[in-house]
Amino acid sequence: MTKRIIALLFALVVCVFSVMPAFAESELPRLIDNSDVLTDEEETELTEYIDQVSVAHQFDLVVLIVDDFGTYSAQDYADDFYDYNGYSENGILLLLSMEDRDWAISTTGTGIPAFTDAGQEHIMDRILPELGEDAFYDAFVEFAELCDDFIRQAQTGE
Image (cartoon, rainbow, N blue to C red; front, side, top):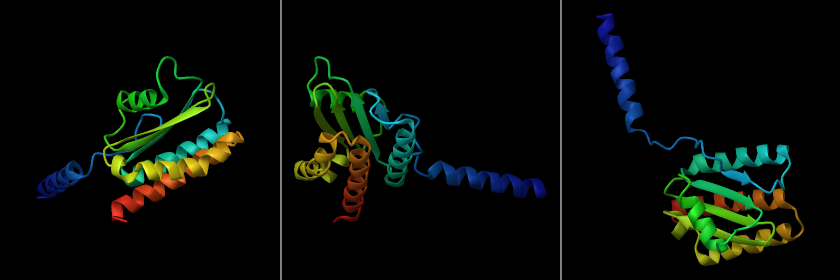
């Protein structure tokens, strides 16, 4: 009798977890600072916040800082990086090139209607002054906060 109850409970647990959404905290880095503009402490804090927002919304929020884009345009680099690095089908990526002092935003899935051109312009209007003053950590935290707001508004139909 006890074995039957344990087997039944085990089967129930397996059924419950098999129907839960498969979105878990990604093993992919959501903060990539190839130009080393952030301190180790800033990277740790920002990574934790970005991961928290991403997991809460089941939506990949990615910040990528590079030295340059090579032969790519900023937009092509951002789009390809997101698409070819295994991020979820719903997301946003902010790309910043230190050498070019240029940027791009790439959206996919539910990120496309959540972050309209006007929304992206609003976000960049808010963070470009900080980026211009090399206040990178502050700019990226504000970016993540704004993304959290935009995603929440999109999910609630606001």
